[in-house]
Image 1 (cartoon, one colour):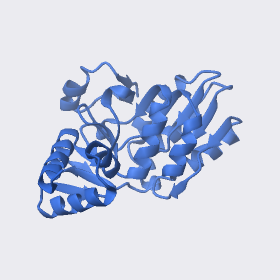
Image 2 (image 1 turned 90 degrees about the vertical axis):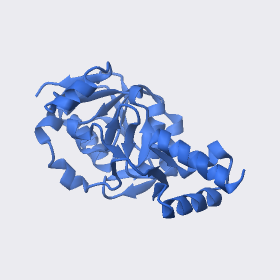
Image 3 (image 1 turned 30 degrees about the vertical axis):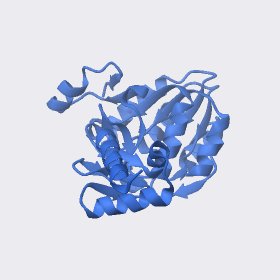
Image 4 (image 1 turned 180 degrees about the horizontal axis):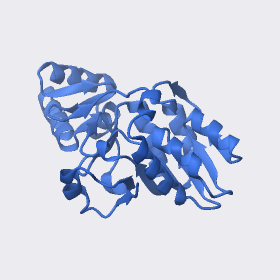
Length: 253
C-alpha cells in the first residue's frame, strides 16, 4: 500500500471512530508498528489528526488526554457518586463473580455491599485492601502500577484476565458518547478495561453526568456494551439527548 493511500485510510478510520490505537491500525492495515507511528507523526505535523500516547484522535474531537490524580477525583461530585455507587452495589448478589474496575465511584460501592458470598477480581490496590478488610475473597491483577489512578495496567494485566469469566463487571470511564462509546486517556488502562468488559456476562459503567458527551483518547467499549448507572440528569440537553437510550439507569439521590 502506498504511503498516501495508507494515510488516507488511517484518517478515515480515526475520523469515523474518533480515535484509534497503533495496534488497531496495524491490524486493519496490515502494517508494521514503525510504519504506523511514522504515518501518525507525519499526519500530526500536517494537522490532519492529533497524535497521542499509543495512537491518535480526530482533530476536531473534544478530548481529555490526561487523568486527574485519584485523590483529586475523589472530591468531585461526591453526592452523585454516592447515589450511583449505592445503586450499583445493590446489583451484586451472593455467588456473583465480580470484576471491579479501578476508580473513585467503584471504590464507594464497597461501602454499600450487602452480598456476603460474592468473589471479586480488581486491578485497584486500594479496592483490594478495602474488600479484604470487609471479609471478601479478592484477587488482584498483576502488571504495571499507575499512580494517578492507583490501578494495575498493561499487557501483563490483560493476560491475567484471560482465565476469568465474570458474572458482572463495574467500570469507571472518563468519557461517554452515544456514537463513540466509552473512552479513557491512556492506552494501557484502556486495554485492561476492554478485556475485562469482554469477559463479563453483564457490564455496568458508573458515571455522573459530567462524563457524558465527553471524549477521551482511547476507546475501550461500545456504547451499547454496558448499562450506564448515572445520577438523575440536571442538564436539560443531556436529559433530552440520552434518556431515549434503554441502557441508562438514573440512580436517585
